[in-house]
Amino acid sequence: MRPRTCSTQLQPSGEGGIVVSKPTRRTLGGGTNKGQTVTVIEAPTRYNQRRKAIITFWVTLLVTALLGGTVASHYLHPILGILVGIAAGVFVGAFFAALVIIWPIVRIIWWWLPEILLGGFLVYGWTWLMLSTPLWLSLAVVAGVAGGIAVVRAARLAVMSAYWCLAVRHRLRLCFAAFVANNRQGTLPMILFARPTPAGERVWIWLRPGLSLHDLEQPGQLQKLAVGCWANEVRVMPSGRKYAALLRLDVIRREPLGDTVLSNLPDLVPDDMPANAPTSPAVPPLGVNLVDVPVSPRRSPDNKETRPRRARQPEAPSSNGIDPSDYA
Image 1: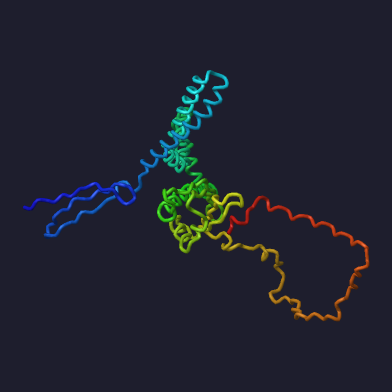
Image 2: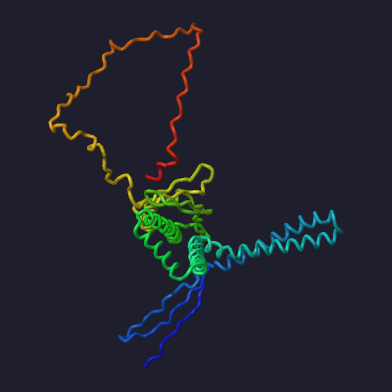
């Protein structure tokens, strides 16, 4: 029986991570199962956050100590003012360093904030309902709400729209992590919020440095986003003229303007109208005769008379807050 060769090693990867090599094993057929490398840490996230936190601490400490010591020296003894400035710098620097360290956790909490709030509402809502009402009444309320959502079409559509708004945020985050983020640090865009539209969902995102609208409009990029979001099409456009980093993504899942619309015009036709009712013959198009066009006299340049101003046309009424781009 031949001994098994083990070659487990820890090697730094090209991106600064740690690579683990699997042991080489002898198979039953006499061949060898060559060791494979598995990346444990793809990017030095912890090291980068620690380095940024240290730099933030010292820079904040220096600036706050100088400014705080200068201001405190006007009211206290210079030595005591310098000590107060250093103490304030240590406190403020530690605060911002801790904020830099916990920023990845804050981002994860932001990604899952709607689900966290929904879970808290369900847990505490059920607890409050159980403490306020008897058990049979609590179960009846829950069954009534669930049955109403399952039976009433409007409630069911509202629940499904909310579900897709939550799901599309996570799908976009996975797409950005897979093939869109191309800055050096691998920082993903900040997905702000989403709302339902008649055609699907509308999502607002904030791009980080290293990514632009041109990167999302590359050939095949929007198709990949549509596949990742389980949609028919994804359209991206600037959300306004003020910030280039704020973009709006329209996720198209259905075509509301392509559905069959039943018209009530046949109901307005009288029942006693014969099927072969006479109609007026079509008038053939006629050409324009320039002789029949009246010629108005041209105004002389010596004429100083002022023309009467035309009345201002009233503005068109608003569309009751309906955005036509929601149906695009």
